[in-house]
Amino acid sequence: MTCCHDNQGPTLAWFEDMIPHCLEHAQAAKSQGRPIVGILCEYAPRELIMAAGGVPVCLCGGDLEMIGPAETELPANLCPLIKSTYGYHVQKANPFLEMADLLVGETTCDGKKKMYELLARTREMVVLELPQKPDDRDAFTHWYAELAKFRDGLERRFSVRITDEALRDAVRKMNRERKLRRDLALLMAHEAPPLTGRQLLDCKSIISCIDADLEVYASLLRELEHRSHEPNRKRVRVLLSGVPTVHGAERVVDLIEECGGLVVCMENCTGIKPIWEDVDEEAEDLMKALALKYMSIPCSVMTPNDGRIDLLSEMAGIFKPHCIVDLSWQACLTYDVESWRIRQWAEEVGNIPYLRISTDYAPSDSARLRVRLEALFETARSHRQESHAAHSA
Ligand code: SF4
Ligand code: SF4
Image (cartoon, rainbow, N blue to C red; front, side, top):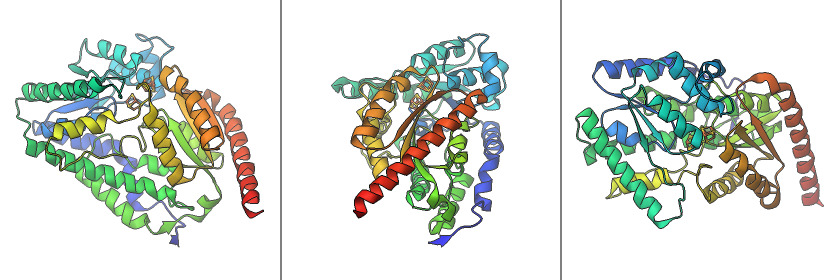
C-alpha cells in the first residue's frame, strides 16, 4: 500500500457537482419522455421503476432552511428529515419533486405516513404497505403482493410492459452499483483508510445507475485500492449507526471527524444498510428475489429488528471500530427507543464505548456535541490502551 498525501483526486471532485449532474440527467430523461419517479425511503424497489423506463430520484430533504416552511403545516415536534422533505414541497423548491410524475412511499414510521397523506393532496402518490413484523410467515407474502401490485400500477400509469428481461437488466445495474459502493466502503476497513468518512459519504448520487457515476466509482476504486492515508491511522475509528445523514445533513459526520474521529463505517441508510445485500440476479422468480432483498433492510420500523444487531456485529468485525455513535433525529421514536438495545449490544457483547446523539439539522448544539464526542474519544483511547496492555501482559 502506498501513502496518499493528496487524497482529493479529480474523481472525488466529481461528486461535488452531484446535484447538477442528477438534474442534467433527469431533465434529459424527461425530455425523452421518460417518467421521473420520486422515492422517499430505501424500501422503494428502484429496479421496478427502472424497468418501467422511469428514473427513480431520492427526495429526502437535508436542508435546515426547509424546516420553517414545513412547520406551517406540520407539527414542530417531528423528525427534521420529514420536515425538510415536506418543506421543499411547500416551497416548490426541489426541482426533482417539481418534475416528478409519481411519488412512491412506504408505510414506515408514522410521521412519514401522515406526511404522505398531505403530499398526496396535490401530488400523484402511491404508498406501498410494508409489513413491519418481518419474521411473520405471512409478512413476506404480503410484501410480495405489494410489489406485484406496484409493478401492475407502473405498467398502467406509464403505459408500458415491464418485461422480465428489463427487470433483470435493472437488477444487474443496481447490483453493479451496490457492489462498487460496497467495495468503496470496504476501503475504510484498512488501518489507515485512504478516505475520510465524509469523503465516502459524498460518493453517492440521488439518482442510481447514472453511467458516468458508475465509471467514477470504478476509477475511484482503481485509484484508491492500494492507497493509505497515514494520518487516518491515528484517529479514533467510529462506527456510526442510526438515522440516515442525507445530502445537506452531514453535520454530525463532520463534527465527529473535526474532533479527531474517523467514521469507518456508516451502518445506516446513507451507508451500508441498503447496499450490503444484492438481489439474486439469476433467480427464476425475480419478483421474489426483489421482495426478499428489500424486506431484509433492518430499519427500526421493523419489530423485532434483530437484523440491525446482526449487521452491526458484522460491521464491527470488518471495520474494527473503537467506539459507536448512535444517531437519532429528534422525534424519531423508533430509532430513539431502539438505542437502548444498541447500547446494550455495544457495551455487553462488543465491549465498545457507545454514545447516543439525538439532534436535528440546526447547528445550535454543535459545541455541546463536540464536548461529548471528545469525551467519548478519550474513553475509546484509554479503552484501547488498556486492551493493548492486557494483550501484551
Ligand atoms: S431509515 Fe428506515 S424509513 Fe428511513 S430511509 Fe432507511 S429504511 Fe426508510
Ligand atoms: S429518521 Fe426516523 S422519524 Fe425520521 S423519517 Fe426516518 S424513521 Fe421516520
